[in-house]
Length: 120
Image (cartoon, rainbow, N blue to C red; front, side):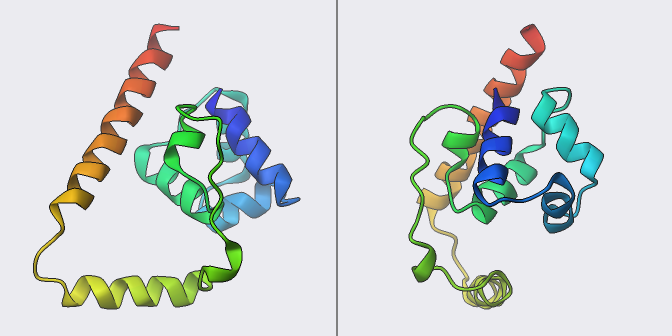
């Protein structure tokens, strides 16, 4: 279950639901509902969770059992990383079609997951 993946990632970092909620700008009760499977995060939240825990949306959406963790040392601090991303985005005039297709594919996977959850 998606909530189990979120809980696993949170526990691996020895975080409380409150701490994770603060990072994602969500309430502790929202994190609890995600972990219990009573609520499903929207796609943007899933992306934020994957980015924070340095894993893939595929792992969180249970499409893969491989966490595919990136090397923490090569990743800039979140605030520094955000600044770098914003600078790059401002300078880009053309968006790489591959990234658009990847985002659309990820979003499609999320919608399929959500649809399957509603059938249960």
